[in-house]
Image (cartoon, rainbow, N blue to C red; front, side, top):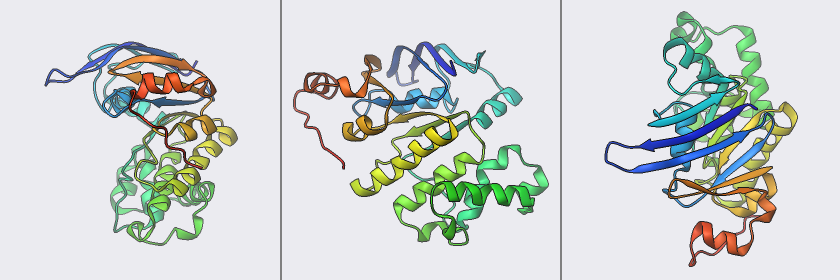
Length: 253
């Protein structure tokens, strides 16, 4: 078991109870997708797992260790093992694609290398390899802001791979992309999961993508898990329970 979340609560300072006793486990090599309406707690959950925000109560067990409140070097070590891809690409727009990918390694590089960008041949080789994984190695020398949205997201995925993460988190990674590009980007998450054995936990909206890529699904509603199981067992009735009576499913091919 790579990840275990136990009775996790998150209450923000404004009183919003974003997570209400969330518990689940993730096996090594799984492709888990979390679904639910905006505001259901999906992003909060991922941010608690990688410690971008502090859980209020509950536990997060990663690779057999309680990491709920680790700090300092223990926290830095945890972040080196967990990659993160966001809805917004968060690239350094005026820098090259290659430099953006290398920033994923900065947490484990020396101060001199990081400040003066004097990287070893091994680091450059790794960065090119990550770009090859997502199919855009030919863009290495281009400025990041010259790429399309889908290409920029693939750079963000390559950046996360620089860490050799045990767990890759993705928070609505295709929400800013058109339908055709969305499917293309999801194929790279699938490739990373199946070829490298990297465990993936991904927030998504579109059930057509969920059914195609997820090995298991968790649905959140108002901060609580209301469904856990196979993506193919989400019936129309379950869809309306998760998304509301007025919701209509949009399919992405």
